[in-house]
Every structure is written in C-alpha cells, then in structure tokens.
Amino acid sequence: MSQFIEVLEFLDGTGRTVAARIPHTDSGEIKYGAQLIVQQNQAAVFVKDGKFLDTFGAGRHTLVTENIPILTKLLSLPYNFKSPFRASVYFVALNDFTGLKWGTPEPVVFKDSEFEFVRLRARGAYSIRVVDAGLFLGKIAGTRGRYGINELEDFLRNKIVSQFFDTLGTNITSVVDLPKIYDELGLLLLNQLKGHFIQYGIELCELQIIAVTLPEDVQKAVDERSSMAAAGDLNRFAKYRAAKAMDKMAEGGGAGGAAVDMGLGLAVGQMMADALKPGAGGSAAPNTAVQPQQPAIFGEIKCRKCQASNPPAAKFCMNCAAKIVPPGFCEACSALNPAGAKFCTNCGGKL
Image (cartoon, rainbow, N blue to C red; front, side, top):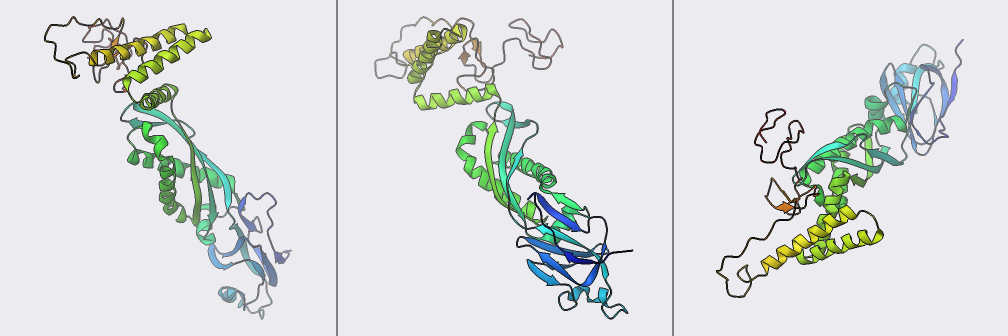
C-alpha cells in the first residue's frame, strides 16, 4: 500500500549535493495539499512523466491548484481534487560552490617558439553556482537520485583545461611571456568559459590560474634569460655567472658545473673585450693589420639554429635559447655519430 507524501523537504548536511530527488527511487504519490518547503538557496522542480512542470523558489508552498496551476490538469481527476498525484521533486542547490580545483592530470605539449615543444602542467581554482535548475537537470544531472559537486567537478575540469590551452596557444608564442600575462590570461579564460558553462545552467563566478609548471631544464633556461635581462648588458652578465661559479666552488660542491659556469662568464667577457677593440665599432681609428684569430673555447658546441658557440655542457644556446643538439646526434633514432658525419650510421637519416 502506497504512503502519501505530506511534506517535501531536503536538507544537505554535507554541503556537497547539487541536486537531490524526492522520493529517491521513483515517482511518489504526493498528497493534495502537501507542504513543500524550499530553503533559501534552493529551487524545487516538479517532474511528471519525464517533463519539467513547475519550479518553486524559497519558502513554504501548499500544493493546491491555486499554487500549482500547471499541475491543474494532473489533479483534475474524478476525485474532486482530493486524490494524490504521482510526481518527483528535484531540489537543486543555488548557492556558490567555492574552492573547486582544476588542473592537468598529465603534462600537455605546447608548441613554443623558443624551446620548440614544451610539456606543461597547469592548475588553478574556480567557483560556480546553478542559475537555471531546469536546464541543469535536463543536461547534466538527469534522472539520478543525487548529484554531487565531485561529479560536477570532473565534468567541468576537462572543459577548463581544454579551453586553457586553446587560450594559451592564441595569446602567447613562448612560455617566457607567461609571468607577464597571468592575470590577463585568467580574466580572458573566465570570460571565454562563461559562455560554455551557461549552456548547462551554470554560472562561472570566479577562476584563477595558480601555477603553470615548466620542465626543469626549460625553467632553468627561462631563469637564466631573466637573469641576463636583469644584468642589463653582457659584461655584467659575465660577472654574474662568474660570481655564481665562485660561490659554488666556495661551498665545496659541483666543481665541474662551476667551472663550466665560470668558463661561460669568461667567454662572454672575452666577447665584450673583442667588441671594444679598435675597429670593432668603437671610436678609435680602425686597425687594418690582420689580427690573429682568437682560440675557440675548448670543446665548444655550435648552435644549429644561429651558429653561436656555447660551452660543452650547455643545454640551451646562450644567444638564441634554442635547445642544443650535440654534434653527430641523430634526432630520428637518437644515435650518436662521429663529428662531421652527414648521415646517421644507424638509421641512414640525414644529420
């Protein structure tokens, strides 16, 4: 024997429920004249035969024909409006859900003008609220008895990450420019995603980009470029690198790397000295005598992109920041060939 529902109300003790159905399993028999209690930040949506009928806002509602005119035909049975009617009521939370997280589950490849292909990770936070209960139920929550914010986060996270990298690719060409446009990028992403979210009855209230993480070697190259820009000229940069190298050796560790750093500093200093010689762009009279060629840095590596000389341990070119490829290295099969080889001895590819 069915039991008529006389009071319809939903209280969420967890604060994590976005939508809940009363009754939870199937349509129930709601008594004519029953009390519907909707909390301040809720909306109640009646569903009958798969169709959304009335939506009620906050307050206490008595379910009679005067209050539910759309349900009048359902109640116009030969029972003088005394019969119960079968329907479901969905309570939808309209409050803000804050502190939600988004991020890349795996690194995403970004085409960079300076470092070629870079694998990036990104993360941030956002907040939302449901503004159209019927649209939200129809497109996302469906007929489930309860729909939580965790399920909604999984759905929205993919939307945010996808749009983030689309926006990133159309607004910057290199990750070097990222720190300058963090705030602008977050605002642009927020405005672009609002249109996507509203089609599900959801308003995106706030979105923040907390961090974009670069691979360690790329981050080191970006830091060194920033240091060079802060130095202001090559002479000061050479002194900066040499000073860092001496600090490393004074600490008693990393002597090999420190020697490379010092070598780079001295090499740049030599470049500055050559530039200041008479006839090299200075104010002194040009010297037409043949000058002996300066010896190259021992074990130097030339950049394939700009042909600049680099220290043997360099991973990125100090002139153009392109990734350094060792001489004889085959990019197709990663085999190392003798210096001067034109074709790979392993796969036959052109070097």
